[in-house]
Length: 259
Length: 219
Image (tube, rainbow over all chains, first blue to last red; front, side):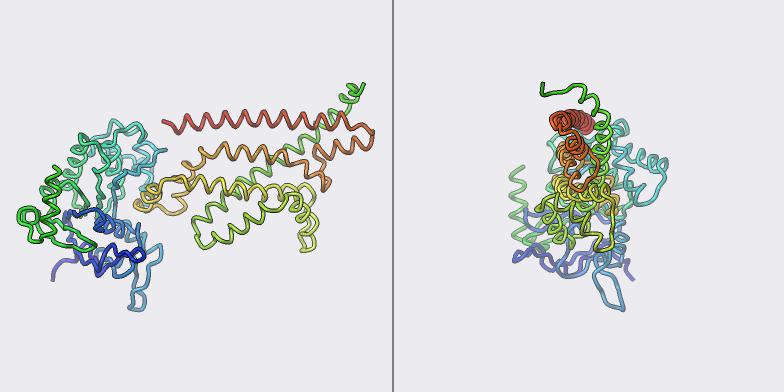
């Protein structure tokens, strides 16, 4: 018997009116697997993450997390739309880091990291602060814990956002173009942190990225999305080294051309 | 001489006493307006299907004169078994009337919160209650303090309407003094000056509060 996948998209479709963003997506992600999603804009790659984080509804199909449906629940043997309690229970396994950081601007780095552990997990302040201090140390910002987001650089803000997501002890981490809003010289420090948590934490990671070098070096598998479908997927060596699909070749050629 | 100083000094304590009633009506009315307005704005977002009902309610309240609403609560509610004394009925009417305006101000404040703040709250699995209390409201309120402050001053200036149901606030007291002594110049002028002074003081306080909040949020 094979191990249960951490995440499974089963015939998942997403449409906005007449526009089909994702077309019967089937995708399994194993426990601890690091998967990069690449593709041209509008190919539906960010939507995959947003659906898994329940920021978008789905029109068809089922998303499974550790064998349990995310947006549905079983009732009399049938799958019905899930209630909020069910969604929150499954959602607790997932954390997300956004392109635009989305830190809470009226809270210090520390306060950003303890808000959810205290209010959602019911941790005591001292316990939450100790945990947050560890995580801020992990992302190299223990000196900045009392700073507000506006006092931090983009790279520092994004690292706080990573610590904040990790504070909820998710099993799955989603990274949505987390370096796209950063000045080039700040990209490295954020990728370095992701590399480190990939090494040190037993996390399943799903990331949408334009950093091909990072995707190649870091991920176990790369999925190339095109027009709402996975056009090609495989180990980074194969996909980048010898892409089979013409679309993939064109995309990679265009991206590498841009430098 | 048209202005009688000794008469002024004589009626001043009486008017001062009535001023307390005016200020009380203002403060209670505004607390009611600010609270109920916030509740309306939050419910509208948290329970989407209420949106239409709340819109109709707010429009109904804003599109009818406050004086009619005061009369309605004081004279019509008793027909349905709800008898309120004049002060309570008047303050309730003022509070509900301005709650409709305040709810729109809060709504504008909520609309200005970046979508990413809501999304981060979902990603962190915060409950709706925590999201409003800790994330949305603390960011939405400071920018709308001036608008809420304007409604506080506007509400204060409408408290003379309570004289229509004989609440012994400033205007009613001035009218009684006038009809008793046939001298209207001093009482009415004094009431006007009192409103002028209080409005100017309130406006200054609101500006100070605004500066304080800006300093706190512009870190």
